[in-house]
Image (cartoon, rainbow, N blue to C red; front, side):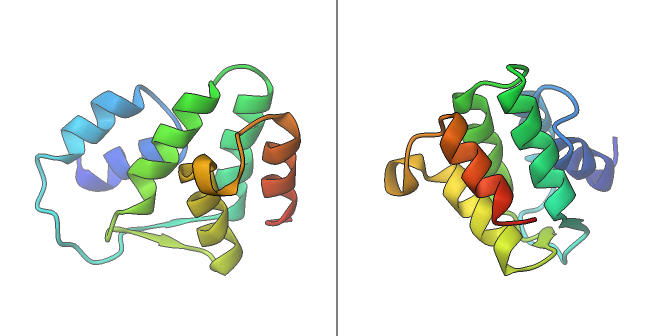
Length: 108
């Protein structure tokens, strides 16, 4: 897979994120922005979590993977803030249903 394909799969939560992150580690760290994360991408992953397809730990791990990437950009500051909050539940509140809905509503 190309770097862009791996990034898109991570952003869309399509596949095993740990394996995709490991695959991505084969590429150089520094890169220009290749993919932009949209509000729809975040809402999709939140919905999967609310539907029980992804655990709170998995969405936190996912957010941590995408939060630190130079090759991923954010559609706007609300999307960037949502990822930060998902990646840091210790700072912003446990990722329970109400909290996930709150984060999702901030990117409406």
